[in-house]
Image (cartoon, rainbow, N blue to C red; front, top):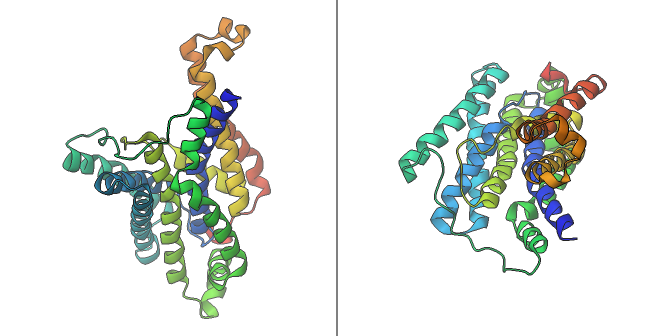
Length: 307
């Protein structure tokens, strides 16, 4: 039972950043703008959360600061793609590089370190006789986890029921027709990109709150896994989150297998060295996600304006 609870805590910890980034990606891409800047939102949100937590000692304020940072990066991306008409992929790469380099510079300026921030002054959950229960309780006390269900439900209802959601969908499917009906396409797209950045960055806050510090490049490619979940989920918030949870479960399984040689079959140990086995296991979430995207992309239809 203890092992199951530890694994469940690991699944939640791995899935939450991916799920929030996937929801942000759905909101952005449904407007008709290809968004590979999810990596930047996660990394920027993680850094914003660290700065706020170190200044205030509050996990809630850290989460809000992460969303503000993501919204700012989303605004930069929106200005580049919507106002300046830059190619969305090129602009997304530029924003990713901006977040990667900017956080390293800010770390050096603020904390005299190019690798990590000081440990966050946040209270830990009370100790428990069960390691599994302690890990799960600490995960369940995380503010991003409280907010995530509201954001998923809100994104689903907004895109399917609200005027704003219908405008976002119209801009992504047929912007010329939407413009002819008086819909301000550029404004709607900019709003969707800023909102998507804010939601995705909350996933970055979870990375920092879980690790109790900010580490350079700690997003670790999760933004691209989240983008895969968006594609696999057919640009629907709930489906995208379900795929993100599946990818997160694979990542948690990778952590479990890589950290405990006793669960590795003897036949595998006879073929692969421990280092080679760990490399294969670490690649599992990325490799299986790539195979899933290759298998399902042809049967899913992206917003027409994405090209």
